[in-house]
Image: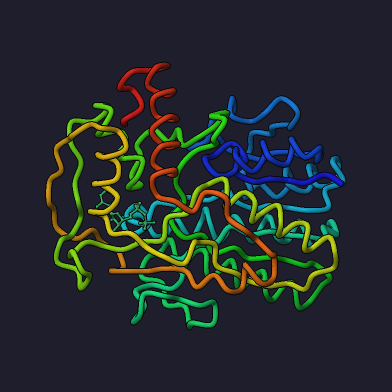
Length: 333
Ligand code: UDP
């Protein structure tokens, strides 16, 4: 049974593809390489360079490879970018997913694992969010993902497609074997940015907002190691293959860290100091959001292996050092 991984040359996708290949799965990757890197796709997986919105290409790929399962990650995923370019996000994330989903249903694909996001919840009243909380996205990014969730739910009711929606919290770190990591050029995600600042790949970094209603005034997030997120996908696929019903679950650890906590941890783990500038709030950022993880632990019997901020930071640092050894400073964007 071939598994199609869309966005499989990207940060999270490349980790998933490596793991699936290690497990002996037949994998085909569809990625337009807008932010991904072809060389992160292992040789055992076939890379097709193209767009999820290209219906003819997707149909051909699904039938030629007799795809039975799709892990769908291809998307634009930067919250502030989505605020500046909402229609681009709806086009790429929502309209693109519609094309993919239509082709999947037509081709009789059985299983679909969808990469959604905690951004669907918006700015919750209490930080700990369960999947039953009514979603109120604050950004076009969150809304674009929520729309795709809805399409998937409706399609799943009307046909035999079974799905798992995984709402990712803040994914960070890198493959402990350093086969892949986050290579994004103009990185915006906190841990990557802080690690780059520590290693001198950027002159300084900013903390966006110090007046949030949190203990130290900075935003709180639930940071999950990318390898634990990968195991959630593997478990989700296994669950569907065993006949599991369509479902939706948060992917996080159930506890959060502030932006200051993260910056302090990067300084401590790296042993390096760097300049941190206090700046105003960034558009679209909720104050605090942490996953209620009872569902994923119960339904998938998922047990994280790297639930530790220092480990996440250490792996992110090692990956960044590897990148910088290849192209000093060029990767800071
Ligand atoms: N953040 C920051 N400086 C940065 C990048 C991010 O202060 O250079 C903050 C951001 O405002 C948010 C948190 O770190 O409060 C996590 O942001 P990130 O972009 O990593 O993930 P998001 O939660 O937006 O998906």
